Length: 199
Image (cartoon, rainbow, N blue to C red; front, side):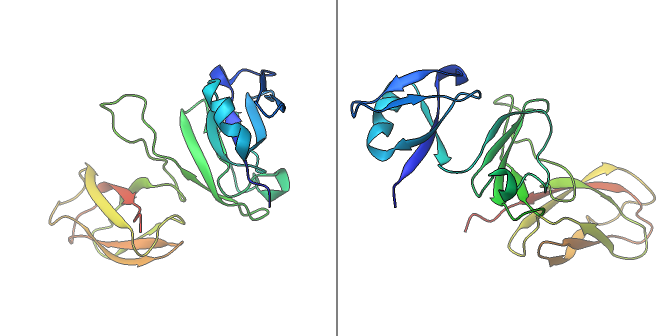
């Protein structure tokens, strides 16, 4: 098996040419990506200002204007490790499953300012969101990105009813969601953030 790597040309320049000491000439594509650089040539291109991107043979999108969907999958040459930049919302996504019509993309932690902290994607497969307690029964929060080993942080967003003890996680069902138990009469809106276990 031949080991190769994709690199990004300096300033993501399109059609930029680079020649390695091996004599191989590489040219960046319309997005500034140089595909399938041979292992022996990588250092030469890095010394020319190129930046390593990741696994060769998979597609990346560095000019997206929206988040990727489940349809951005293996049928479009995306694969595990593919990267997608949403230039509109300044977010980066990484593909963790490229199954046809069921691709899974997670948000890479990004930040626009050093003091801002991480920016997390919201939604049913994101790392953060909100839920509203109903003052009576446990509330189910749907999130396909949650795992049994995750930590879930809860904070108050908007007061509703009578706020009591901080809500807590009752159950977690991997790739489905979690349930939250609150105090009777608490109908407040709460934020949640999922912290992934690196193990």
